[in-house]
Image (cartoon, rainbow, N blue to C red; front, side, top):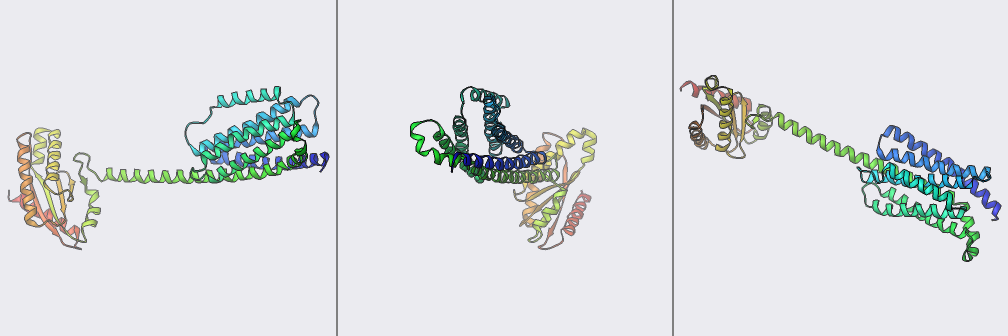
Amino acid sequence: MDAQQQLLLWKWSTAVQTTSLAMIATFFVLLARFGRRTELRWWAVAWSANLLALSVTLIFWNLQPVGLQPLASSLYVTAKTAFVLIFMQGVWAVARPGPRLLSVKSLTTILAGYGVCAALFLDSIPAIGVAQHLTMVVVFLPLALVTARAPGLIWLSAGMAVRGLLSLAEAGAYALQMDVPWSAEWRVAAGAFMSASSAFDMSAEWLLVLGSVLAVSARAQHDLETTNRELRAAHEHLRALADRDPLTTLANRRALSDVFRAVQPVGAMLLFFDLDGFKALNDRYGHLAGDRCLRDFAGALRDSFRPDDYVIRYGGDEFLVVAQGLDRVSALARIDDLAARMRRHRQQAPSCDFSVGLSELVADGQPEAALLAADAAMYRAKSVK
């Protein structure tokens, strides 16, 4: 293949790659517009910069403007480097959500400095090619290693590894195009490789696109799962708060359905408590004293029964204990212990006596009927005082 044929092949493959890049850039711009994710915004800018770099190359080679090679070199190098660094920003955003790898100010400074150096020192196409492709090697290969084990980024890591290795081969091919003694025998083969390199670049770029889309999909799924877990936890927390009495920290009446559902298959003892003279205590000493009395009684009730027993503030000055495996004799002993505790409280602050009614919920019995029976027994006990 002679030099003219290589140039025609290069122009054709570059034109095809430019068309491909236009599709990729448009895809990411639209995806960023509707996806509203940080990495998508970075990648939209990155692929647009890559499209600009290749467009500058294609325009320069077709028009061959006199004296504008330094400007074209600077534009190409700046845009291509912008693609590499901004793409890296997007990868970092999806792999390590949070702080940016590089600030916008740092990016701007690096690109401006690199563009000036390209205009001043890169005076040939091979020199530009070596410098630019080595930059891609330095960025893509380490980044591929860093992200290789990150969840959901395996294809993106593979794409960066392929792009980095291809850039290494292209940097070598450009080096062989330079006027060095040892490159003469390889120069023809390197030229043939370079003329078709755009096709290889295009394949690697689409692999990057695939990896990027799969990475965003995996990250979005992870975020949804995290949000779902947080919502479930918040729901459970709110439900626990709704089922908890804020004054005594006991469960309230809302929790009864779950309690009865748990004990109904095996049965339980129900103890229904009501404070005697609570209204009079409130009227005489005030609501603060009444609240203290309720808290003292709730604490004494909790301490008098077993940790597995359900202690519930049924409403106002009424309390309910649901105890599995507790017989009447043991229940009466615990009531005596509760009365002793309340007598000790009476020595420190105004306190109330209590009345209690017992009923038994048999296995697979009706909880509502047992509750009504305990309530009725409590009122009978109160009436004889």
